[in-house]
Length: 253
Image (cartoon, rainbow, N blue to C red):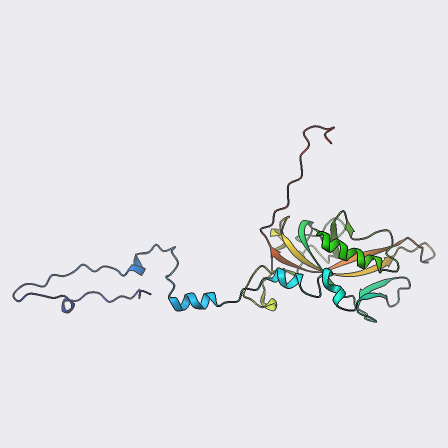
């Protein structure tokens, strides 16, 4: 690698003939100083080797193979446990656990209200799920004692929400695109820049709730599964969803 502080030519460096005045060579700047200001500095072989040895973590693969991913939760004992103090309601977690297990869904963003709460005062996100994820979701629903008539998954998409406590954006949005950083060092991601088609992993807590009658009694068929949003990890921002077909006329099928 060239040294940007290259030594200028001196008369002692120039061969001369006796009786002749030495020819002074023009001071030519070293190659590194001739480059445009915007050009990156040259990389030495050692620097290049160090760069190639950096481990880039593909966090999308990490999430897809983790026990958090809904497609892999069959690897650990999980079930619908009675919710403490809420007869007829359940949380999805480890046996006898009081807290719900964090279940991750991976998919492409359809829409979200993470930058600002929606009209119902909630932060929410809707993502498109794969066939394998939908099959795994069906297994979870089929094991629920009172899945009710409402579910967060509809038409191949899942909607997860969390109540907002002011106009601030949803905080736990992390930039988990391929990076050499450890997970605890990953930077935040601005929710306002989260576009449709972005691949994300959303962590949720699954539970059921009961719509009570006037007497406060449980009514069959009036329960629902909800997905409470915990965190959002941005995995890939290059995916683009296909644009919906535009109608050419009102009666176009």
